[in-house]
Length: 396
Ligand SMILES: Cc1cc2nc3c(=O)[nH]c(=O)nc-3n(C[C@H](O)[C@H](O)[C@H](O)COP(=O)(O)OP(=O)(O)OC[C@H]3O[C@@H](n4cnc5c(N)ncnc54)[C@H](O)[C@@H]3O)c2cc1C
Image (cartoon, rainbow, N blue to C red; front, top):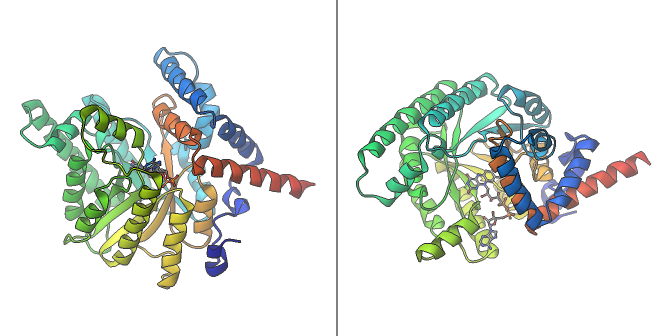
């Protein structure tokens, strides 16, 4: 029994609770895949081959659908996610819906993304008990070139001025829909060279749409960045209620490589331990200032989740404090999500959906994440193995 379990009664290691929503067959598939995913080089090669096969139109969709898709994707359309969302609800969880498509330079794709986001908000308005939040990628609504140029400052060429205007029209439409249906949106954080412009859009619209306890927009802060504690401090001193989704950050290798190529200082903390310290410092700063902000603790890190729970207990907060929530990706860290939800905390599972071929980049990222010999991938495998063993023993 962990100290947390003993002192607060919250158990974040209970695989019976964590996997109650999964059939034994699904767990066997998860075990098989998590084991396979540990061979990092094989995963990298498989991802490259998968990408090529999809480009060439080879029929690999059924394989993807029945493997990675089954583990990490909520469905291929919005309505197809409903059975999963209802299953999550039975265990006191909601979903953070994510339309799993990548950034696009094409106007038609950006328009389609806007329409899908609007549909997601309307869907969330129809099922408020199932959907807690909508995740939004600004690079799906305007091209990465625009975000990069805006982030560099200086004047924009005419075609980008038009694109920026179009973006604001799109995002205003989306925010107004979110306001009509009272559905909070969370803007994803992306690479550091496009993030300054994303930050300023997030701040602008948070100021317009967040008021008091009605927090309709969250920004995401990546704590692997060395400059982000200072940024949180700045956000905690604005005159509107900020919403912060706190993550560690997904692009370590890409960030380091670019810094090296262009010869600027690496923006990322030098070690995992330094990122962990920064994350937990930010977590404490946010919790101490919860009267000025809303916080989504978006992590699979057990220690960070435990720290947030301990703080809530120490302060005698009701676990369903309206300004505190947790989120983990669908298919990962289930004992954390379901353990927190069982204890009454607000938990939104991050559920991506989308056509299997277009969701492939998302799925291959999940595969690569689980292939590194990180604590997380080892822990996923241990949890699944433990639950399978428990079920087998239960039958004997
Ligand atoms: C609900 C949810 C939403 C998310 N949204 C976003 C988003 O909008 N933008 C985004 O970028 N990511 C996002 N992520 C991914 C997130 O940033 C992490 O990549 C992922 O969650 C793993 O970190 P962790 O805190 O869960 O756990 P851990 O496994 O404890 O930490 C792994 C993380 O530590 C950091 N790290 C690892 N090695 C090193 C090293 N050598 N030096 C420095 N740091 C290191 C990296 O950030 C790595 O991802 C999201 C995650 C979740 C759960």
